[in-house]
Every structure is written in structure tokens, then in C-alpha cells.
Length: 280
Ligand SMILES: Cc1ncc(COP(=O)(O)O)c(C=O)c1O
Image 1 (cartoon, rainbow, N blue to C red):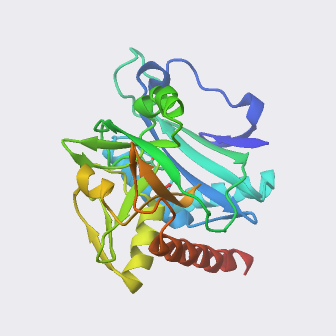
Image 2: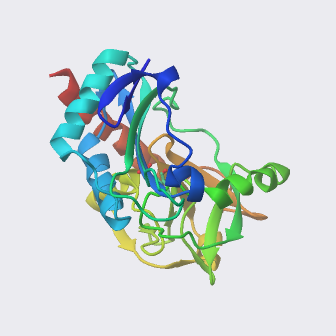
Image 3: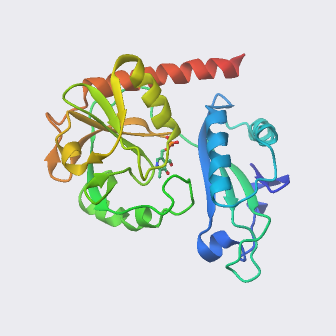
């Protein structure tokens, strides 16, 4: 299996970075992640656009144009031939002489791993989540900092939950790796607009929802979330997952909701349309 490291393809077992990298020294870096299905990178343009925004926000210079990066990614897909997989594009802070100053040149890693994704079938049950008061650093940037998400894994398990929803000052934001949505009693599809990473799945779900329902991007209080008619999470690897319990509060009848299902089905159709592009 090949990994792309800075300027060349190297076998994965030889893809090393030096310990002076700011990612190791200070946890400084960004990344993005997308799915490959039938050897086609789904919604690649959306992810590359976000990668360039993250890089700019963090003063990291990507040594390629978006089109060049895309060509490298298509080459990697051809070389590895892992039809169902995930690709991570990581840009680290780079080699820092004193372990703190940001050097001119970041390190670029593009790695591909075989992965299985949930089938395109709406789940018959939803998940329980817990909440935790926390505001991510640079929430609108896809940084490599998942410290609290990883640290809190034991607590999630202790509560027999599947994930943790962050809130701050009574306003919910997102999960460590997913965005959050509610559906109100008036069938309005609402997602938080502040202190979040603008997920690509969130963007697609909002666009699909706006074809059928009223949508709102605004602050959502924890109180409103607990009393919502439906709640769900979105992410690249999970698509849409219904949330049926938040802490001790069961969301309505405790079953995945109708609008969540409709959005799930629309998202699967959108993916199929996008995949047709790859087969042309
Ligand atoms: C903090 C955060 N929010 C939301 C998401 C979901 O984004 P996407 O739909 O692009 O996977 C992610 C993805 O990893 C994330 O890290």
C-alpha cells in the first residue's frame, strides 16, 4: 500500500516523519477525510475546498494547487486499488528547529486505508449520547486536535453511550467528529451555526432538507435539543445517525424519526448520483 509523503509515493511501512514535527511536539496540524467508493473519491471538491480553508486559517502553505492535489489523489487511488476505503490528507506544522516556531514548510501526508461504511439502509434504532461542556479550539478548522474527544471515551463507555455532544453556556455545538441537527415540532430542520466545523455531510443535508422543509442555522440550546421532536448526527463515515437519548432524556418515543429517515434516503440518493460521475 502506498502513502504520498510530501512529493512522492512511498510504501506505507516507509512513511515516516521526524520527531521535530510540530504535530508531535505541539499537536499542530490540520487534515481532511473522505470516502472512496468504487475507486472514486466522493465529493472530493468539497473536501479539498475545506482543506485549503483550514490550511489558510492555520498559516500552513499547501505546496500544490487544488487540481494538482486532486491528481495526486487519483494516482494514489489507482496505485492502491482499494475500492472501498478512506483517504486522509494531513498537513502537519512541519519540522520546527525549536519545537515551537512555525516553519515555512509543512509536511503533507496522504494515506489510504480500506474501510467498511454502514450500509445505505436507515437504521432501525437510534443511539444514546451524553453531553459535555466544552468549546473546541478553532472550531471552524479541521485541526488534528481531538484531545477531549479521545479523553472522554471512557466516560462514554461507562454511560453505555455511543458519543458525546459538546455544549457551552447552555448552547449545543457538535460531537467530536459529527455535526448535530434537531427537528422541531413544526418540522423545521435546525443545526447549530456557531462554534462548529462546517461538515460536508451537514452541508449536503442542509441543501437536501431545504428542498422539502424549512431549515434554520442558529443557536440551539441544550434544553431545546432535549425537547426536540427528532435529533440526529451527520458525518462522512456515518452519514446520518438518529439520536434517541441525550443523557437521561429519551427523545420523544425513543425511535428514529420520519424526517431523519427522509433525509437519510435523500442523502443516499445524492451519493448514488455522485457515484455515477465516477463511472463515466
Ligand atoms: C469536529 C467535527 N465536526 C463535524 C465533523 C463532520 O464533518 P463531515 O461531514 O465533513 O465528515 C467532523 C468530521 O470529522 C469533525 O471532526
